[in-house]
Image (tube, rainbow, N blue to C red; front, side, top):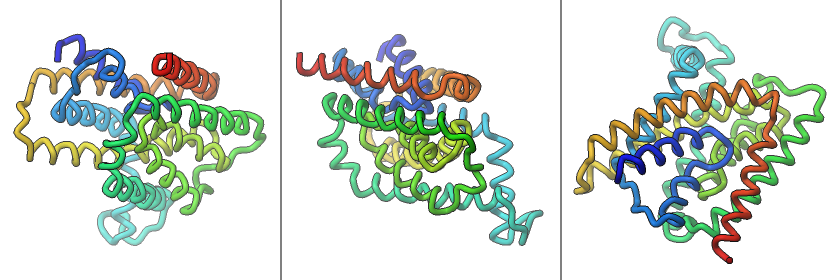
Amino acid sequence: MSTLEIIILALLQGLTEFLPISSSAHLILPSQILGWQDQGLAFDVAVHVGTLLAVVLYFRKEVGAMAVAWCGTVGIGPEKGKQSFDGKLAWWILFATIPAGLFGLLGKDFIEAHLRSALVIAATTILFGFLLGFADIKAGKRIEHKPLEKLGFKGAMLIGLAQAIALIPGTSRSGITMTIGLMLGLSRDNAARFSFLLSIPAITMAGSYLTLKLVLSTEAVDWFAMGLGSLIAFVSAYACIHYFLILLDKLGMMPFVIYRLILGVGLLWFILG
């Protein structure tokens, strides 16, 4: 890959991983439309590491509190035997990650073979864009929002099931989890925060799988591409999370809904035109 391709692809990963517009779609499209070569396993690992570090660092206080509280629920550490919401939230996130893990394990070959086309991306981009818009309108009209503590295990699992569907390119992991969070009565901010926290084990699983594939492969490693890609993905993802949460209550989801619809229609025009 050229340096320009590294910069563009890493920026795409960092900016779209946490926005409700599908990172996988934006990483597939350059090869579909511009004819770029696949970025390779090593680069995929690098950008996943960058985005994972960004979300963990940004939510370091929440992650630390959940880790300590979770250890307490299993009889380890200073909070041994204590029951707190942080501990409960940690369990919700762990269990809600299971559907995506199972779906990825069982369906990855089918997805790779049949669902990574520009046509599928266009269709899912439009469909789930409409769903996000519908959920955002409902949330905007709601007088009171359910606090995150009232989400419950069932609500967390529904969001986890939605995350599994996001393995289909164009769906957007953050987009569909925020959509379900809004439909369940969460505020935009809480829906986004739960989505970001839920992304941590999901990105960890995806990165671990790609790392294992890289270790078992004979692919040559471009350390410059890995280092630069990881750094750019980290910086852009951290900035994206920060400003997205600031602007969310002011702008809502509609700018992203409009972007998805324009992107989807543009793809259909490109494919069918």
